[in-house]
Amino acid sequence: MKHNSIASLFEERFCIFNLRSRKKSSVLQEMVRHLKAEGRITDEHFILEMLKNRESLGSTGLGNGVAFPHGRSIAINGLTVLFARSAAGVDFESLDGKPAHIFFLILAPSEKGAEAYLALLSELISLVQKPDKLEAMREARDFESLMKIIGGGGS
Amino acid sequence: MREEFRLLIALQDLDIMIREAREQSTSEQYRDMGFKLTGLDELVEAREKLAKKIPKALRNRYEKLAAHYKLAILPVTGDKCLGCFVKLPTSFFSSAYSSELLTCENCGRLLYIP
View 1 (cartoon, chains in turn orange, brown):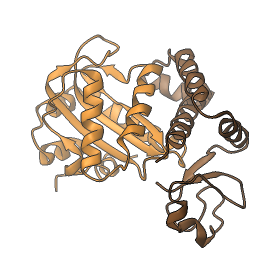
View 2: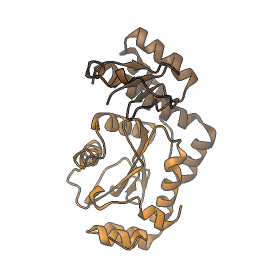
View 3: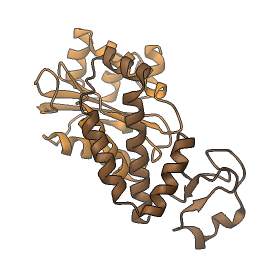
View 4: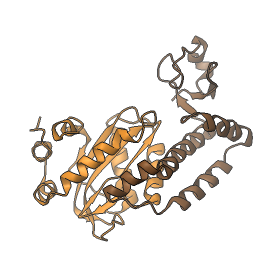
């Protein structure tokens, strides 16, 4: 999966540049409610339960201030990516113990296999491993700046 | 949506996650990306607790289907079963069935109107 195809998965309406929540469970809830408000999911309960279960399998906070909550459910219609940013940072039980500032919420339908999002996860992880990209993401205030970092060139 | 449908769907989501964590190729990919999958036992425990909340007859039906199919319960989103892609009877779309758990006459999967 190339950067330009990753960029095509992002939508301005699925971005939160100023997360209000400060706790792990409320951040998940804020992101899921955002998708519900945007009409992307019909039932936030299923998605939230699934994401909480995924976190109990092992935190998706990989360190360096980035977390990748993700999972599959029949309550999701298509591959969905939500980008969120927290200036203050959130204790996401990350592997390095540091607060998470950048979140990529990835949801996929159950009908598709895990490969539906594993390639995307892998590509996003490679992207944030580049210090300049990560720093720029932490400073991104709007969709256009985010797309320049990811490689989509903005809307 | 009736509570037992919600529980069944949550159970299926958990089963998918447990299956992924157990599958060697998937779990290796996760580990290569840096994810730790250390909570599998807790997840299995949560699955068992959730399963006990579902009426026994329905749970048994789900378990039998889940042994055969990756997805035992599916939403009705068109005029076909999303499991076997056989056309569903028009009676399924009557409001009388909107809160019922339906069964695909071809493959036996459980279907619900979301």
